[in-house]
Amino acid sequence: MYSFAQRNDTRVVDEPLYAYYLKLRPEVDHPGKEEILQSQSTHLQEVIDDVLLKTYDRPVLFIKNMAHHLIEMETDFLLSMTNLFLIRNPKQLIASMAKVMEQPGMEDIGARQQYELFEWLSRKGHKPLVLDSGELLKDQHTVMPKLCAALEIPYEPNMLEWKPGALPEDGVWSKYWYHNVHQSTGFSPQPSSSRPLPEHLKPLYDEALPYYKALYQHAIKA
Image 1: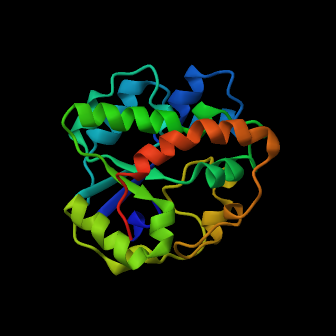
Image 2 (image 1 turned 90 degrees about the vertical axis):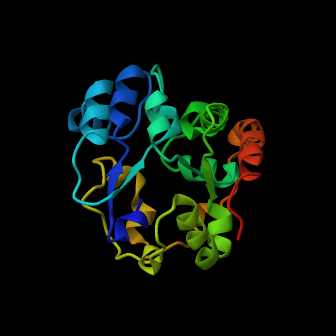
Image 3 (image 1 turned 30 degrees about the vertical axis):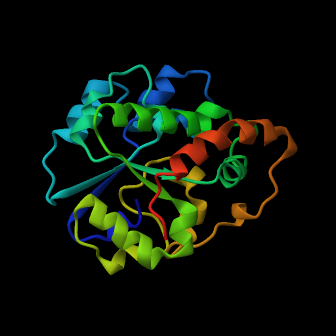
């Protein structure tokens, strides 16, 4: 999202279905939960109408969403979009999430939901794009132009750099989840990339790894 926010032709939206998800999952105890519920509509159709039917002042709309937020809904509205899946090695993903949640589960990390959504879109005749964080860090100067070409938008080199700090579009949850990105100025490895996976989360890693590998086959390569 921070990368696409640097584009001259793009507006970004940060997780518009977060409050909707939390309302349907009252047992989920995320940091800042009540603040999030107050900051967004929890009604699905209101969110879809506000995000998709709103008139923007730029031609490209980038919506950052979490796969596990797409629950108890018809997802046909996704067929009107170009869907880009950002994936990350589950070891790094789980280690990062464990900094905020002591016991994340499969729904929290979204690995299975990503895979199932990718398969559903593929069966509908769509060709979702897959961007792997490891491939991006390996050679961002190759991967980002390839991604833009696949999205049929011009590549802008300023997508690789941004100023440290928050975006105006950040959700109210950013103070809990975006510490690293607020300190960043571009794509770089995160400290969690080399952090050991907590022993009690290894079963989750073993469960998530096949979904990651299946999606990685479709990822844009450096």
